[in-house]
Every structure is written in structure tokens, then in C-alpha cells.
Figure 1 (spheres, rainbow, N blue to C red):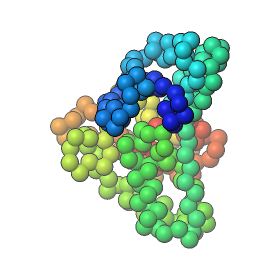
Figure 2 (cartoon, rainbow, N blue to C red; figure 1 turned 135 degrees about the horizontal axis):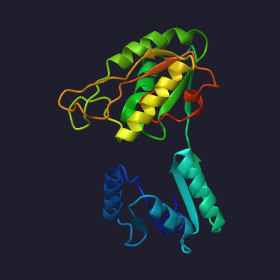
Figure 3 (spheres, rainbow, N blue to C red; figure 1 turned 45 degrees about the vertical axis):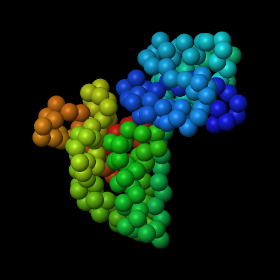
Figure 4 (cartoon, one colour; figure 1 turned 180 degrees about the horizontal axis):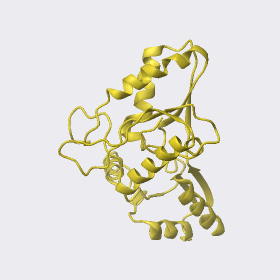
Length: 226
């Protein structure tokens, strides 16, 4: 959108998973985007700060965690830039009793656990209204059938999370949800994948009886937790 509106664009992907970005940019160049219009820079905080303070960059759009997004917003604003900072998404799906049950359960399983829940548009909260609440056990059974494995293996439904730190953070939040009184209807902890015993795997996890004061409701878990 920035390019369509007449701007050049500098894209900084996450340093933890930049390969998809590089594929997309290569396709854009093949499609005819002129040299210098679409640019990629790699790195961590030092690169983020350089973008936030560089005098030739007039506007910034960020998607990611609340902590990093707050830093980007504050630093870039201090340098006179327009900033759009999208942070800590908690995407809700509202399920009404007249919905198609099969389609809804399939969609929730895909949206909640696909990409191991590590995408900005993952559905992390399902609000079941009226009689649709009776579908929750079927959702749990459907999630149990999803295959957890390395992303390079055939027939994998749920791959690993991006790092050991991400795994520990997600496991910590699952534990906190249990401590705060939510019901763990499906526990994805303790998953071991043959041949990848040291992998960062977490299976599909479902909580019920969650209230809005709980940490797992207020925070973006960014993992396969619904």
C-alpha cells in the first residue's frame, strides 16, 4: 500500500524468521518493482532504532509485541514520524448457534493452531453463544487429531514454535492460566516428536472457563492456545 501511494518502502522482517519475507520480495522484484523502491534490512534492536531515527524515513508501520511496539511508537514519535503501531492482538471469533458446526469447528482449529498460532491473525479467543457452547468437546476432539511435527515433514498440521524462548514463554502462560483457575480442556505441553526430541513443540491447547481478568485472556500468547 505504501508503494501504491507513491512511496519507497524499507521492510525489516523479524530476525527470527526472515526467509518468507525474502521470497516475497524476490517475487515483487520479478513482477517489476523498480530497484530501490522495495528494500529489506535485517537485524535486531539496532536496526529498529535506526529506522525510528533516520531522517529520510517519514512514517513507520509496526506489527508485533506490545513491548516492542511501544518502544517503536515512542522513539519514532520523538523524531517527528507518523507511526502506526499494531500490538498484542487478541483476535476473537464469535460463534452463534445457527452457524454451520462442521465448517466452524474446522475453521477454529485451523485459525487457532495453524502456524502453531504464531501469526498476527491467529484466532486466540472463541466466544460460543447459546447452544453453540455444546460444541466445545467436539472442538477438543478435533484438535487432538492434529499432527504435531517438524514443518518439513509431510502431513504436519502444527509445527514448532519459533524458538526455545518462545516455547518457555508460552508454557509459562499455560501454567499461569491453570493457576488462575481456567480449565485446561486440552493440554499441549510435554509433546515429544520422534527424531526431533529437542524441538520447540507445543501441541494444540484449549482453555475453557476463562474470564477477562485472567492473564491468558489479557495477553497475546502467540502460540497454539485457544
